[in-house]
Image (tube, rainbow, N blue to C red):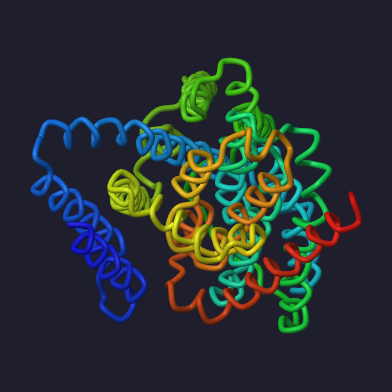
Length: 425
């Protein structure tokens, strides 16, 4: 059974990677892979009811991610529909590619710890669309946003789902993880940024101004929607910390509040002008195939988790590699192939707090490696998957153009962390 599931996962993974060559949307490949993996598992499980219960249990975690993504995308679309991002882009006057790349990357790096890497990616990719017209240039900007958001998210307890898991599990504390991983995360972002800066020459071409039949919105309305939307995104982690409810609950609460705000702002409007500014219209514009892609991939990975394939892989590495530093870095690179959430969950199950107490370097290094290692492949992180859907980045393009840069940053940041460790910092 496990052999068949592994083969199905690999074939599905290759289909996703070859999306452009096959001409088949990655969402279709992911959905087929996820369902087939579950089908094989169900047919080889003595009690089909158990398989159903496991699927329903896993669906709760999957739904949390999907609803979070749905809510975040809708909030961003609403801000965009109200020309809210124009208030920000109008203040970014840089036209040189390198200067703009640095501005966008630094904003991403320091915003990600507050919002989280997924939401930050959605917001910044939307901003870049307003600034850069050339599709090829936007791909590089988007690739750098993925790397910077993951690098920024690793040093915050709410910046990445894995650091949140480690925080809730008692393996790390907020103040310590910030102090220990800020510099490694910064280096992880700066190395690829420096290399990419040497490659990108010239000036950007801003998008052409297009005439819109829609009435120009008052500055007050644009500001209210922009500020409300950004506050909602920023306060989602605060909501989670206070209530201990999953992040998607805060996101859905925020979406509901923004929905009410926009309805009140436009209650006197009628017809198409009002519809174009509504949540219903924003829901039509979000990238639904990317959400379905997420569902398929997470379903397949959940099978790998419950069948013990991921846990067995972690145990095998422990027995064969031996060196803790090497094990952690390998896990980080594996997180670019399979989701970092089950990898971290398996690690938490394998190693107790009696083995490695709170704020032990092992947990700090796990947070760094699994948080930034996913940047090596476009489907290795939630931020990458979101960017892939928004800018139609192909797996092979990212593999050729961004993977070497991401790997260079990953190893450079790891070296900085190990240097800090050796110096007793």
